[in-house]
Length: 436
Image (cartoon, rainbow, N blue to C red; front, side, top):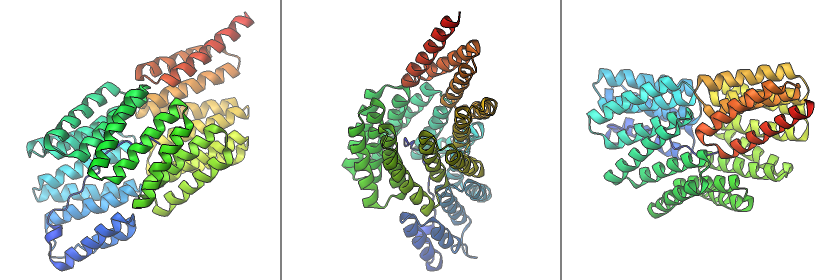
């Protein structure tokens, strides 16, 4: 699981200097957030709403509560509080608070796959940041817009924005932001299959995080470097980097990162064919995600466990896990995950020989990927449909879909997928030639 570094911004206007009856629960809430006790933090932030709480402080509190719900993957609740913050900020003419609320709403819509809405909110936030001269906010908004372009498969536009972010962060001397921008540029190169370039940017980001002592950022980049070696097939190196990242996450109590790295280690064992080990790591990750209430992570790990059962041929169990993951993704509005689960369910029905059902699921997954502008997912489902027509003995349709998939993979520079799709096309052509 690659770390895309969006920024959910905080806004604390007046709260650190508020009267004791407001400042007390606020400080306790901040402490609980650092311990990943988001529900308890929410209760303390709610206790800060007093008759003497100023309008700007109310904006800040709604943003803090929204951020807690965001980190719990309860996106509807988060959105509700960001909207409350937006309304209160407009009434109080609080431009800084309004900028943060709009930018955070943009992130909500990006995760939900509503990319046009996400783009609109991030653009509004960016305009305010520029109007009030908030360079840090400008960098944050540009970076989040870059992530929207990544989701759309428009990698060159994303790259251009991340370069702008990098320049701003260097101008204002925000080293942590510089490291984040370098990491996101690395993600572009990794997506394009330019692994040595990706590795170079991840190493630069890693060195900055070590230099400034940001352990969380260090763990993120170690995990990203592990993913590069994973893609290169250097699994022992990948395992070493993921283990180092995991150790740091445990040391600093970063539960979300711990779960992600356990999942990545599980993936390495799955690739190695060590399914029992993979299952154990996925289960550990699932338990942590459930413990901290992160539904997005829960859905990802359920999907991973489903793939283990799929590999073992235990298709009923696999179907159950993928269906549960699908239900969670629908509940939180995570379209990307919904499409992935639908595609996996399609593969199960194809394995069972229920080709019409499989085609229906692939088509649903394809439609969602197109709706959210996710090119990689669109190409994957076109490829699945092509393989299905190959099984049905319809080589012309199989070739048509495979070639459409190949064209998209070439557009986004997904080298591994390009090679695999080319091999699939050659197999179909050979099969077709033999029949003729």
